[in-house]
Image 1 (cartoon, rainbow, N blue to C red):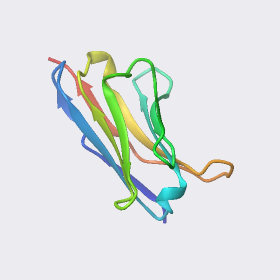
Image 2: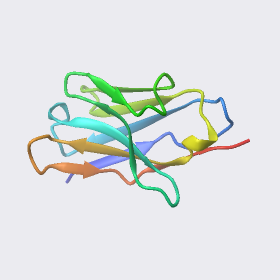
Image 3: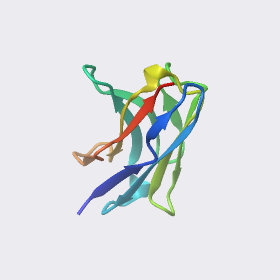
Amino acid sequence: QVQLVESGGGLVQPGGSLRLSCATSGITFSLYVMGWYRQAPGKQRELVAVISRVGSTNYADSVKGRFTISRDNAKNTVYLQMNSLKPEDTAVYLCNADRQATTLKYWGQGTQVTVSS
């Protein structure tokens, strides 16, 4: 059974930091491209950051320079370090595992991030 379990969300003041984790099980983690997405109320789900199997990264323009995605293949976990948080970063953050060129794609349940004073 495949599981992606996000953690690390919460309430933080503007300018603060959070580190999200996504622990996976039931997949061969090293074979998957891992991504973080977010969805705010009334808005479409958007890609935040993605990391390839070999560690190449890409970010949405809105988070470049503030967020860092990383992966630990030994722990089957992907992380999202979020610094200089803004109120517009408020959303549910979801982890995605994508084995490209196949139909194997999985989602976590999400973790709420709220940036507010």
